[in-house]
Image: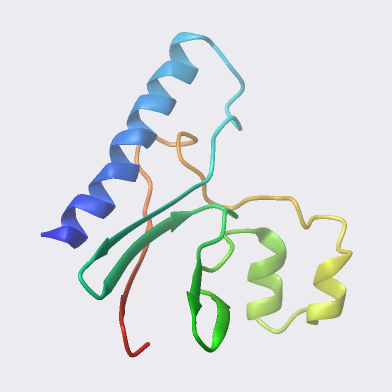
Amino acid sequence: MLNFLLTMLPLRWSVTVWAERHQAELPVSLGTTCVAALVVDKTVYMVSVGDSRGYLLTKDGIAQITTDHTYVEMLYRSGQITKEEAKNHHMRNVITKAVGVESDVEVDYFELEEND
């Protein structure tokens, strides 16, 4: 049930932003990024779209949970560029997924237990 709620929330936002953008005749590329988290008991439920990041802070430190939806991250993950090249890449700000660009958006979903 929580998975459904967390994935439907950004979808609803996407439809709303998309409709408002069309009504106002704003540029097609207008959208926004989103990270949402819900903590229930000892479980963290998180969704993300775009390059906003979600982190988990534990007694052992801090860890990035989400993956950026950017062109440069895609190049890095496919082995086409190194992490160092990604830091200064001329297209590092190009987002490949955002809320409101399309009427529908697929979100990344994460579920973390206390042991993670």
